[in-house]
Length: 264
Image (cartoon, rainbow, N blue to C red; front, top):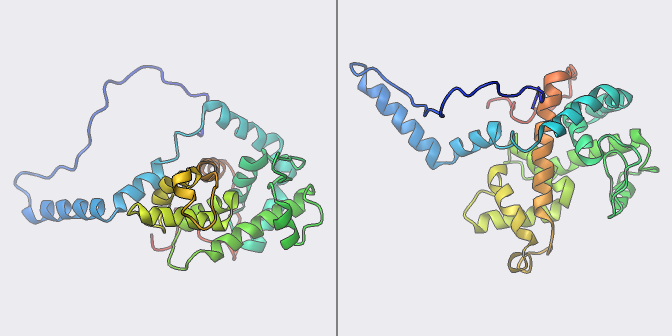
């Protein structure tokens, strides 16, 4: 995802399994503690969340998708970078995450318009624009600042118990389908015996709210939950790429970046 032109030169052989190994004459308690540790993180879902956090989204894009972002990072992003910086200073959200969201929504096209009526670089709905007092959704500065503020509102609306990076990923999904439909997705996660507070579980449940047997039983009805998952997962990759190539701001308001929360 960082170097899309790199290709495999030759095969190294079949995949080999990995395992923890301990000396046969070593301390038995160490092996026992390691066994208990892995049993615990498999049982409570920690291992599943870690695998998704670092590897669950990395294979979604094609080399052409990555090359497109890298090209526009050089040719288009410089026109809007200062406004993404301003948005971070106002909200504390990493400007590179906001830029990743903007790229996913419009490829940084300030004149973008969808068939459903959302418009602008951050693809703001008319209702959200009215709520945030946006006078022109096609003005890139207004769009970027409004998109950042709206994402922050969504993050703040989630229950306080939800930590990062799940809070950000859930908010990104809500940016696509609305907070109410995200709540329906979280209800579906509970019905499946999954956690409504963990993105790896909620993203399994969200596509179900497009099915009649499920959305007819939910408060807000039908929604394209798979599109919300696609947005959040693509933004995760774009954010990873931009973090690799774009410096962050030394902002005193900078919020915890997804995956880098203090204490994790």
